[in-house]
Length: 339
Length: 254
Image (cartoon, rainbow over all chains, first blue to last red; front, side, top):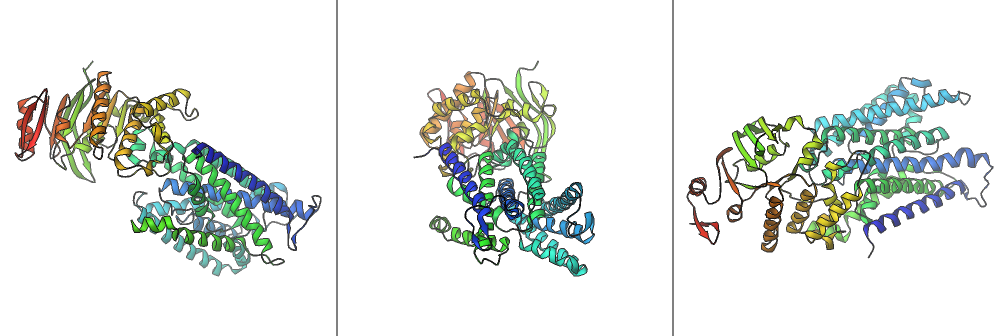
């Protein structure tokens, strides 16, 4: 029988190998199917497929990490960044930024300077972050804290619906941003650039480092809030920082790819179905799993109906929803319900 | 310097604006085991939480004569180990991970688990016969087994004061005896133990018994003290009688 340490290292190694395989496959996947051999010097490979494949992995990793944080912070396996309103908040932030024409409107002209492109990306990500953070705060305010899980999830649903309605209203008021917002709400990896990848890589590094160092809080919280406090953990401020980390991870991914469903919810579940371990390790594995899921889904979205491409958010929604339904019907779950 | 390691002086506390402790005074000597007893809703768990610095209260709680409020969270955690009533355990953490959490007060932000921490946890697992469960998830253990692991987690802190709320509620007789032996061994080595217990016969094995009723301390005395027996009879509606068996006292329902 494998020890937990062996299970963790095997899973990590498996994810790393799968990542490499998917990265190569992502470079080969074209609108005509798999192109072999790889034409590395082709501009399409370097300028489009490489940032898209890498970006899909990074966005998935950010969502996987955000999902692990949400489930750890709220001690609820149903919690994910979207259920707590942060994705709706991020969407509203991006919509507002586009509507107000900040940072040059929908897209910068191709000849814009590198600095202008970075400012544009950072500006959109910043708006998404502020929106996500405010939405989570609003959810916590309505739920009067995190103690009552049902109230928290209901508050998250309410905030998500209300912010979604405000976003729709913005779109009615400024229909010219509708095309950009449509690909945003469906979730798309098609427009990812090298800049997006750099931003997501930086955000993933910062978020993961913070989650790793603050992980004892989440392990302590799994034994109850009073136990965590008795261990010298400053629960309120640390929880606040981790909420910020979750909002940053969600916002960075959402600002680059739009709304991609279920990755944040499913990735930590897939990890926990195989290994049970401390938050530092499980969040790392959830990030790897999220990356693999979204990168795989992106390649499938390109190939399934080639030459037509499916929005990757639609695919993750169908696959993620199907997985959760299957989990609900699994023998273990049925036994749990019957008990 | 006070001879008491832990003191509560004029403590008042409330849950959601409902007062639960009224002008509580209690003293705890170093190396002694004090058991807090009383009927349901007497304020026993609240007092333990106030002593652990986990519940806001008016009045003073002094640790080595120093107000608990003046200590940092880490300092307090390293001095006062607390074991609460635990309804459920983590499904994710293994027994080893849970016991290792007890070493958190000694770890800094940037220096995680040390070799010393590992040795302490390994020794504890062995002495408490938990080594076989080392890799098992806490959530897969029974209530009694889980309580033993959580006791090991509290002992791993290595604090001079150990506060325990109903630590053996689901534990079978042999492991209750083992718990008693652990407490005696710890107090002999200088640790102060304060526990809340419903089992009066176990409580009467303590060095001191503190009787509470309706948020007030009624009496703090040795188990052999006739005043304590009278107080316990009054608090438990005269449904108890006390008898000496060999060198300790037992309470019988009448």
